[in-house]
Image (cartoon, rainbow, N blue to C red; front, side, top):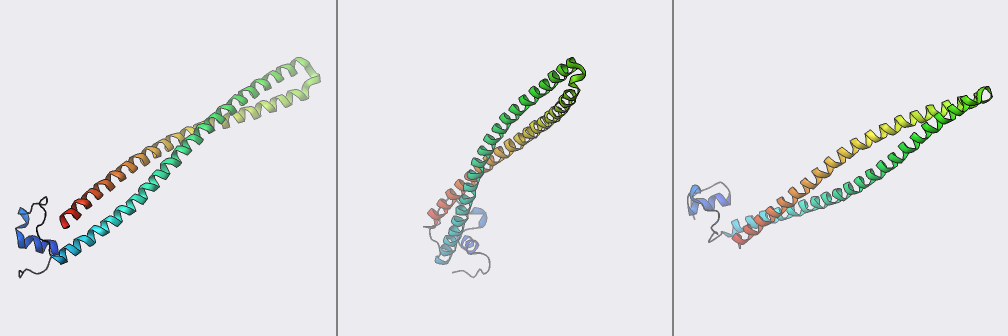
Length: 178
């Protein structure tokens, strides 16, 4: 048809029909050369495969979303257990104080009991510090889990929008090719 050589099939077709700056991409191509049509269909097939792979990634996003929901539930349960532990520790501290007071009232006969009560109090205070550290760690975990959860949700929505847009463009391309 023409003597133009080099460039892609699309570029060659565009040069034959009208200058590149005048091409209206919304107007269907009236006649597509068989070689160009074959190339466009192959590219559309490749894009379809890419869209399918993106859908697989979107499924992974949904699985991660469900995992994050499970993790959030586990965090709530751990907070509840941490609250129970804090309550037990407070009771142990009070019990050790009461035991020390009673041992002091009993006098010399309860000296061994005073030592035991002091040790129980020491252990209770260590448990209290551990309980507070656990609570702080759970709070940090909550913040990280919440941020990750939100990122996964946003990423999943962006992924689905991209897939939808890609599939729409593929449909338009195939409509123009056929």
